Image (cartoon, rainbow, N blue to C red; front, side, top):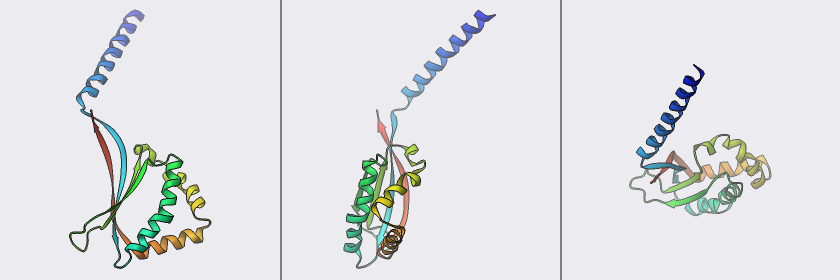
Length: 147
């Protein structure tokens, strides 16, 4: 009976292993990095002020996150709004994978404290940023890497 059980286990292992390789072969892609895409509408007359914020405070925080290995990259794109409700700036932040988003606030908070000396400075920066732009929405997208 014991020999028969071992034989069944070995057969099951072979079937599972071959099933996994069949599934891998059937997918012509692998899952890649995940990017958070934010759509921003800049308030009239605030483009230079908002770009200054991005070039200083925002950039400092993003660079700290890159150094810490929290993000892979970040980008700022200008967009041509087709109507008044469209974004005119797109911000992207790229993470290694979906798991990188787990506990993200806990990872970023120490870096925010490093960039902003105290909470009052952080609150003011957030309020100032809010006057310059409106976030229209955001979306998570995942790169699919073709094999």
